[in-house]
Each structure stands twice: as structure tokens, then as C-alpha cells.
Length: 353
Image (cartoon, rainbow, N blue to C red; front, side, top):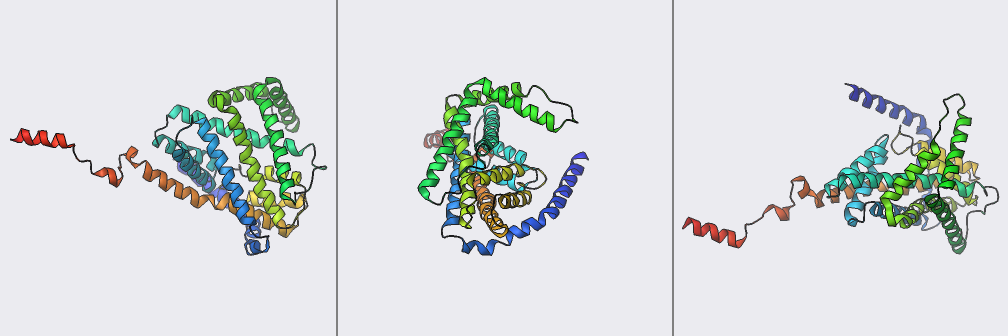
């Protein structure tokens, strides 16, 4: 009785939330007619960045799962990602779907669960580290690169900084403890009326050790994949903003990007639908992008990062289901007829004689 009431309440909250953010969604969707106004090839480049970002996630998961075959990793990741975008609070639903698909493909349960957990922890930690790039130079940073070579240099510099920071946090305890202590102090100061928390530095050390225990010797490849996942996604947003003619500072756009990713974690709408559009558009306006251009850039970015993965996930689920039908007791057509070996037929014939 409790479960149906909980589902009903969740659907009601989702409906109310979508109603509240409907104006922002309509403003964003109304920009689709202006896609032809952006410079040629921009949408294709945004989609290419998003595909590369998903490829990094697949690589990271394959490393955490002890390098199984690519097919179950890719299909389960695409299907789980799509499920997380269409179900309210879909992060858990997407992870459960991916876990079930990997188990159906024959992967062991314990290592699969720990591998997926480690990947989620590492990617979320990397996302939270991205503002470290923007905070020191938010006012001094360069505008969005207008030259391809300049943009490549900026991207390589950001990659190097993030990799160095990530390596320090993976190797040494002291930097991670200081980060945990700072976060704990800020939280306790901002929420002074609530009970203070303690032990966050030790908790971060335990979570880091869990990640290292799962990844083993693959830790550096996994760190590069986790960084690439977010930098490529961020690159897609940069291309969208540059395509509408804005010259806003790249580091301000980075803050808008991180804000959008945090809003995507809000569990009351599928994939943060509506909240991301409203928040990202507002943050881009604060970063110096015009209101109409910010809505267009948000639409182009969300088209590639939110809407196009949905049919890709459905197709991946179908391919995975067909490929591993025999593990569910439903053999493929080519395996439905399993003729007896020739020597077995001859033996039965002799027995009858």
C-alpha cells in the first residue's frame, strides 16, 4: 500500500515541478527554428563532442569492470543513461537497469556492483573539482577561443591541471583531508542551525580507497577517462555558446556548465528536465550571453546531451536483449534447432534394431 502511495506522490511532485518550469522549457524549445542561424556544422560538432564524452564513460566503466567485452558495456551504459533521463529520480533506475543488463551478459554480481559504484564516485568527484579551474581565474580567464589552435591549447591546459589535481588526491592523503575539512567547515558555517557534521575527511579517504581498490593498475587511465567525460561535455556547451556568436569568458561558461550538471541531479523531474534548461539559460545570461542566444545555446546543447541519447539508449537495449536472449532461456532463432550429433542418432538407430 505504501509503495503505490509513494509512486503517486512522486508523480504528483514531478507534474507540479514540470508545470513550474514549463515556461523555461517553452522558451528553450521555441529556439529550434533558429538552429539554422548558427554557423554551419556547429550542431554536428556538438553531437561529436557528446559521443566522445559517452565513449569516455564506456571506457571508464570497462576499466572498472576488469575489461570485459565492449558490447555489454556500451549497450548497458547507453540504455542505463537513457533510463536515467526519462524516469524521475532516474539515477538509481539507470544504474539498476545497467546492473541487470551486465549480469544478464554474464558479468559477476559483486564486482559489477563495486565497479559501477566506483565509476559513479569518480565521475561525480571530478565534476565537483571542475570549479577549481574557474574559481582562481573567473575574472582573468580568456574569452571563448575563436581559433581552433587556441581552443586546443586551452583544452590541453585544463586537462593537465585537472589530471595533476586528481593525481594528487589519488596518491596523497593530506590534500584530500584538507579538501574534506574545508568542505565540512563551509557546510557547518552555512547551515549553522542544523547539527554540525564531522568525520568528512576520513569518509573521503575511505571512498578514495574504495575507488583505488576497484581500479587497481587502471587508475590513471580511469582518471583520464573521467576528466575527458566532463571536459568533452563542457566542450559541447562551449561550441554551442560560440556558435550563437557570444564571446563570453570560457571560465564563466564552465561555472554555468557545473551548475547545469548539479541541477540535473534534482530527482523530481527526469534528468533534471526543466531545471537544467532554466538554470543553464540564466547562468549563461549572467556570463554575458544575450537572453535569446542563451536559450538557443541551451537548446542546441540539450538536444545533443539529453534528447538524442534517448533513441540511442532504446536501440542499445534492443541489441543487448537480442544478443543475450539465451541467458534468459529464450534462444535466438539460430539456436532454437539444436540437432542431435550424428553419432548420437546412429546409436539410437542401432538400439531400435
